[in-house]
Image (cartoon, rainbow, N blue to C red; front, side, top):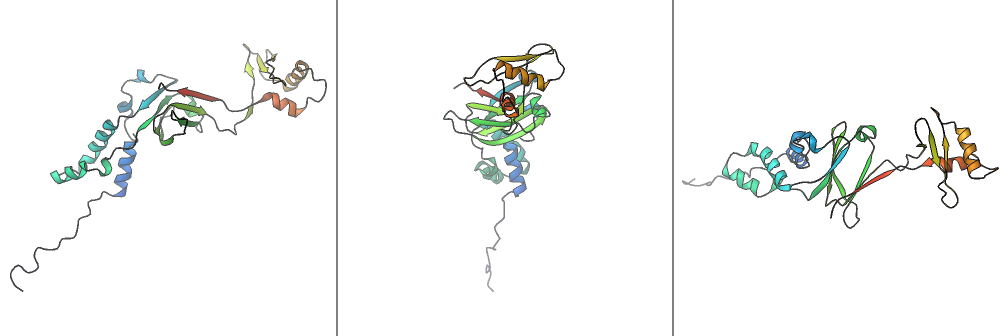
Length: 231
């Protein structure tokens, strides 16, 4: 073998791709998961009790956030050049959403939150995380124009309204959408038989006011609260 034979040495290509666990962790970080609450809300007064704040995520801030975490493994100039070219540092799509601070977050863990763009199309949920028992962060892919909060459609129930201290009332449903109301009280409970009798009298039904008719008057579907953002 002559001098120089076998050179240059064949060096196997190095696998410089980060482990999938790291990629997943960085992607989660880009969705503001694990970010300290004080980074998101530096002053409690910005998110008072029983409030909602709409957010538009600054992707340059997110890029710097992820870059700071990823820089732990950056040693050489080649590392910096490779990171700048993309990989885990690529910013996600436009994210908008809401921060909600309310007792409904803990009271209704199954609360449904739907978002829509200006064109009326539903937006995909990118992140939904409870930051505390009564603070929820929800992010959507795209620009939020309308936000709906409601319980599951199957959560139908009987309901009455307050008519003052110790009193309850129920607005009746007539054939033409009657707005007449039946009031009971003072009472600590709702006497259903008395309420049904007053309903029948108010509707001028002398017979046939059975359980089905009573249910028609009492059933309530889930309420929906809608917020719209300025365009």
